[in-house]
Length: 531
Ligand code: G4P
Image (cartoon, rainbow, N blue to C red):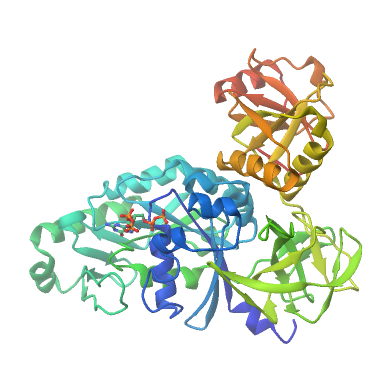
């Protein structure tokens, strides 16, 4: 315990995960609206604004008009201090998107009610499961025609393997959307389009016992169907169990419509009620409780080259314990140095503000002259512990990379190694042929362009990328027990090694992975590397 326990305990730090277009941005805007962080939803982080924002971040960002970086938003609501971590999607999906989840204590999963679970949600969900963090589901766009509610829940359970517990239940959808039934309070909240940008709009609550009034308001058909579905659900659905939610085994589900601002504040309230205060984190001296120690943090993301002229970087860190003060000296454990962090700042959408203090649960960005690596620990000078490292996630796109001018080998290797060290790309080599060729792996294809652009602009090296057909990569977990040379896979399998010499296998499809496992009994493959 320390004297800022209260500040720490009012913090809630979560990531929003979804497939592009499910409504993540719209929902975030509505959260900010309730928190009073913005007056009119859309004015801070509306897509259109983001698209045209002139930031001095990477040039490529400006050229493409997309945000390569993920941002952090902080706002106050009902006594809570909330940190939302955005997980970028579309083409700018990258390993950073996964790493962001390493800094969150819970996740909000937004699902489009007419689509169900989609590819990107599935990928991000896997990382949440690995961390066993609580996941809260918001099924969005009920004002449009939606899939059957039972089917939607079934889809989540089957596709993601997590039990669901609906906190409310939609009554119709699209033109027939009448509202939701609040299971805890046993009342119907009738749908009213509470107008896109404003907070006002009073939804009417009608207790289930007031059947006549209910029938008058939402109609006989809707009431009959609701009663029928409730009977089914009470017989079949999982019971609410906060322990299971906290362990990531059960996801509470709310239905609503972010665009019309229906069901958002109730979801936020439920969520804040159930989610956790900043979680303890594993280190080499055991679990560190947020309130137990003085300042400590770990770097989860490095944003390179915000200012091209200086080749500078910003290291994003999650504070894990205690209080950060801009004047304090901290130890960078991996670098073995005690220092003051330079220009600590909070990154809010496209704005940055210099901050003087922050607490466990918060995310800060600091100027990094090239000292930090992903996963590094910072703590007070008298301490020396290290937080558990951040895993390396499996890239899904691969290309062979060659420099056009063979005389520039040195710059090429230096550049590509530095970019890999920042975590934007992963580089591999042939396993034992001694060929000097480099294979690059990325989580999102845009990173290929980023690599090409940066090598040309920062290192003056032109490269050629030849795409390779591989889509899956697996680390060999029990590499000590396996004779890699003798390992037999499918004909299209390729053996490579990473920068640290770890053996890996590249596969064209998931069928080949299965075949290789079948042919090599005892082989253990993983999608994340903790080496
Ligand atoms: P994302 O961040 O997950 O990619 O999704 P975003 O919030 O940008 O929403 C994607 C589209 O879906 C947007 O429309 C948005 O207005 C719409 N949308 C979000 N929530 C709801 C909802 O509850 N109901 C309905 N009907 N639509 C919703 P767009 O036309 O693609 O973009 P915009 O021009 O409105 O920005």
